[in-house]
Image 1 (cartoon, rainbow, N blue to C red):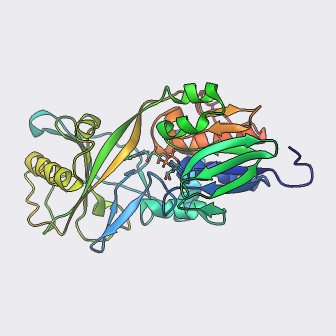
Image 2 (spheres, helix red, strand yellow):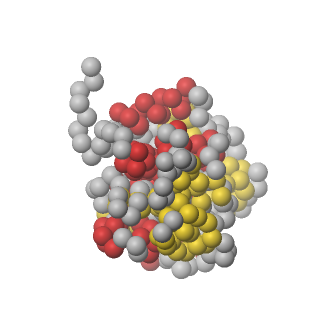
Image 3 (tube, rainbow, N blue to C red):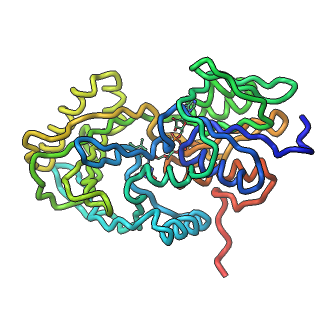
Length: 343
Ligand SMILES: Cc1cc2nc3c(=O)[nH]c(=O)nc-3n(C[C@H](O)[C@H](O)[C@H](O)COP(=O)(O)OP(=O)(O)OC[C@H]3O[C@@H](n4cnc5c(N)ncnc54)[C@H](O)[C@@H]3O)c2cc1C
């Protein structure tokens, strides 16, 4: 493939945080990047929804920053007003409902909703939505992409998949080695339930990790900065419960988890203004790969995502950016290596 007289063409599949971080770095280095996503908006698992006029972050809840490179990015986002600190009172609810204050980690939330950060990162990048990739073929002139809607696109010099591992594996067929490595990452589902109780609640926390029973997390979304005054709760079920109820009806799941929350906290939800459920089939990486990204330099195909490193927003960002750096041949400090001491 000749790229001497034109910009290298890269297709990034997935407009989650990994895909957006990857595409932004490539575009900044004069690569002609196009992002394709099956969804109706960028963000993937950083996603917000408005129901009955009330905002809910129903995917990722907040994020932390540990790696120095990501800390610097977050500081820039903070000064640009894209994220704010969430000083919520976070507890752990253990056996028999006993509560203990959780660590005082610095927790960040995108402003004014999680999906707003994705929209901002996608700003100015060519993004094609509503395109589910079903196959990719490398021909003499480069990669050709085939979508569920019947359309095709190409040729591209490089193909980068930033999808949850189980969705990336069947599309990595051209590189059995990458497919086999990606298949080692195991992901778990999560049912999320959104509730707007009839009246504001008097709970002694803003977020709670729940150690036993169907729930793993209770969040008063309205306690996050910029989310509005109306009481809005987001519940997450544990991976075990979500697996056991994976094919249940959303309405049934919503009622079961709302009851569980009321039983744990004693809250009276009344006749809720909003009560709905969303299933995340591939929510969190239970067994991450512990490789920052995957890349086959001969075929010019790669994969990235949170599942490479961990299962958090920071992991997704560093993995996506790291894959872009690999394509560019630029050296970045590996998120897996201890950082040198700050001067
Ligand atoms: C319920 C829940 C709670 C969470 N809570 C937190 C938290 O509090 N803190 C934290 O740090 N992290 C949290 N996470 C994890 C965090 O959301 C993820 O680590 C991160 O968003 C993953 O980003 P990604 O870009 O790797 O993948 P994704 O966000 O999943 O992006 C992948 C994209 O690929 C698209 N796609 C998939 N298949 C195809 C296809 N065939 N063709 C085209 N497009 C396709 C999808 O539509 C999606 O937009 C949570 C996740 C969930 C689900």
